[in-house]
Amino acid sequence: MTESRDPVAQIAEALARLRGAGRLGAPPWAGRSPWDAGSHAGHHRGGSERHGHGGPFGGPPHGGPLGRGAARLRLLEELAGAEGPRSVGALAAALGVDQPRASRLVQAAVEMGLARREADPSDARRTLVALTEQGRAIVDRSRGARSDAVSRALDGFSPAERDQLAALLTRLADAWPR
Image (cartoon, rainbow, N blue to C red):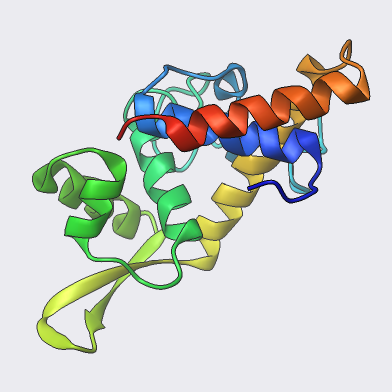
């Protein structure tokens, strides 16, 4: 992963991978839910557009993707990064949870319209899970909020320091035990 990319994007991606792999706790952008971050990838920084029920995951209005919502957001991010629909077992392994927990996360995402089940073309007895457009919008807003938070945190860093931090965090994320 030595490709030349925006260091903010590299850092945001590495932090997301570390958080998912090691359960490092809530990141600084988690205080605002990504679905409240505005309509254009987190560029709306004024008042939030809160849903009366606290967002699509039904959490507390100010909780953002914390608690159960954090696991659901990781599920959506996993589906967004997949090359195609995934089985519940594959999702469980990727998320580091047991299959019953993954099934509950998938069921909640399906009920909210963020994911859909579809028949496995190779085995009609199995179903696969895919991200819906609404689910993709949540992931995109989350990534925008994450990038905005990283950009703000890097305000005092020189371009060379940003590049160095991006390279080191990417190496750490690549080496993190699963």
